[in-house]
Image (cartoon, rainbow, N blue to C red; front, side, top):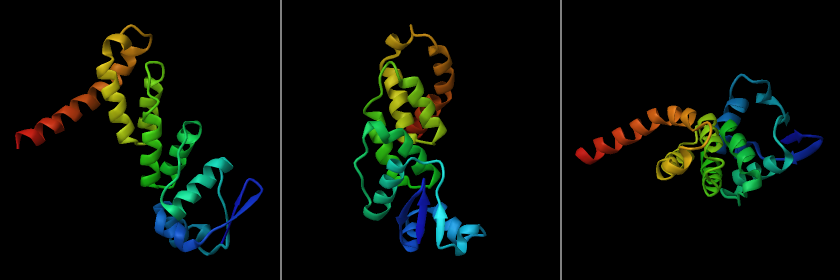
Length: 161
């Protein structure tokens, strides 16, 4: 099968796509127009991101760099590639700082990146005094309080059993 992408062609095996992603499985096995197509088009992803996504599908691993990690996380979430999502979350989590923790937390929310979310919550708790004086911090704390409550509630339930 041929995947058309920003004027380029990428040759892929339908079975590899089906085996790796529930999104591709739905496209090819469901009632979508791609079901019987030999050619499909992938919109809204940069070539470099698409190329890494395909490399992950075929090899099971890729090197995720910070310059592409957020876009790759978005693609991994869209195509339900959980292993790739975890690699992206790990790369992004290495860069969490006082300046970007709010944005990273929002990113984790947008793409259901639980590991990144937990990293952000722990970072916020560890750096509460430094973050407390920054503008917008009260909004961030309002967002994370329910998550922190759930996190500790689950932790306490498991230790009490």
